[in-house]
Image 1 (cartoon, rainbow, N blue to C red):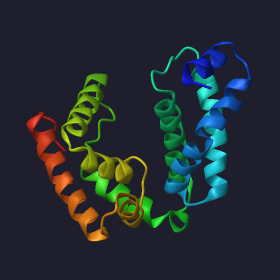
Image 2: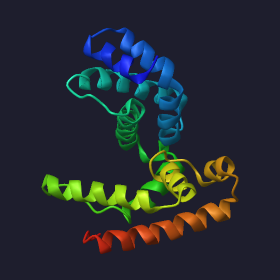
Image 3: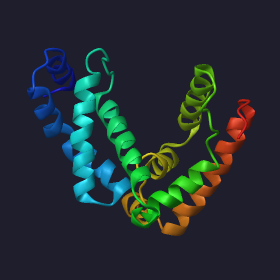
Length: 184
C-alpha cells in the first residue's frame, strides 16, 4: 500500500493504518530502535510506542514522507528509552555517538524557536552540500547510530576509512556552523 493511502487510513481513524504501517515500515523501525538500544525486545517496544505516537499525530499532521515521519518518532522514543536506562546497560556505540555529537550541535534549549529553525536549516544545508557517500556515512552514524564496523561493511569501506571520513566531516560541519553564525 502506498504512503498516501496509509495516511488516509490514519485520517479515517482506521486501525488498519497501524497494520499497514507495520507491514511497510516495521523492519525499518525496529532497525532504527535496535541500533540505538541494542536490544530486540526494547526495540520492538519502542516501535509499538511509536505506532501510538503516529496514531496520535496523524491527524492533524500530514507527513510529506511517511517513512521519515515514523522513523523520527521511533528514533526519539528509542533515545528517550536509552536516557532512562542505567549507564551500565547503555550501548557503547550510542555513548560514543552521543560524545561525538555533543561537539557538533549547540544546545538550543531555552532559546526561542528561531534558533532551532536556524540550526535545522544549517544542518539540512550542510547535508545537502555533502557528496552522497559522505552524507550516507554521516547519517548512518549520527541519525541511525550505526557502529563504525556496520557502516564500513555496508558501504564497502574499511573501518579506518569510515573513521577518517567522519572526523573530516565533523570538522567541516563545525566550520559550516561557524560560517552560518551558529556558535557551539
